[in-house]
Image 1 (cartoon, rainbow, N blue to C red):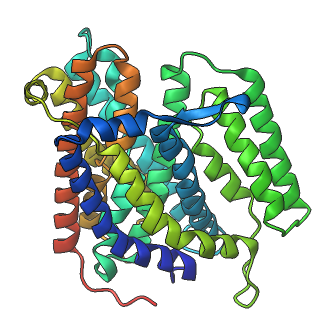
Image 2: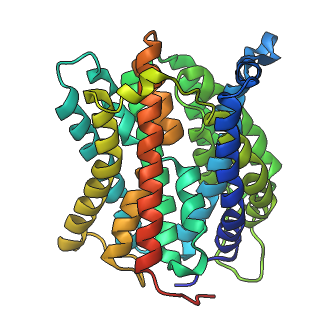
Length: 389
């Protein structure tokens, strides 16, 4: 199955932006641990916006909840395109990332709980559940044509389902209060978007404006606002024609470059801003650090591949085209890059315990680095050269 034009363009962009992303991580870590670290953190904490509309947030929130909603919009568009006419158009292919994501959430949470049940850290069971979609896609894209397109699509779909699962976990278990009026308004806007799709409205402006309101209502409901990007993406109309450019394809084309070369690097700069201290190192050897590292590095690998194996064994799904189980193992490792969402859950889990937050951040960073390195090396060694057009 050939990769759609815009998904191919997205991954080609990510291949180059992946190097930029890694450089931004290094730069951010250097800044955080230099004399300008405090000033950079003050900048990220500085509130900007329009207070009269309750839209005054720190810069970091605008990046993680605002810019990343655009990233999720683009990836959601790509996934919808593949569901309509591409690699995910059959039930067996489309179901595998769902089963894999479920396993990739359950097993890490169980591993963390085994280490930490009955301790002061037990509330952090959600930390190793999340896959950082931006970094995992950037790493696999750096391998270029070594990797079959079906594996790239599988990872993208897996990461989206995984992140949606993490958002639901945050909403149910880590959100202090759900504002039901805003949530109902969000549901109303979502319904409106799909009604527009049903009546074949093709002007993008009629989707973008309600999409902005959807983001606003979701953000104020207490649910992570990046889910608005995915909901909006699945409402944008498309077609199976090779000659007529659909609204979905137009939006993909518009967003591809700014997402790869602007939004993702900004995201990396803001979220790798971790200041190292002596207490962090000790956190790797306590049950918190062991639960996070084992949950992300081993739990993701075991959960994703175990549930994938069972789904294929019971003929509910099929292995991605042109792929091997060794490549699935590599993907399972890459999914252990928890990073931003894991750090976010860590902050929610230990709201007032700064030292525990720091220990959790360092453990997440170490686990994510190990997962990225192992995943990259396994995929590089196990994958032959592909020449898919």
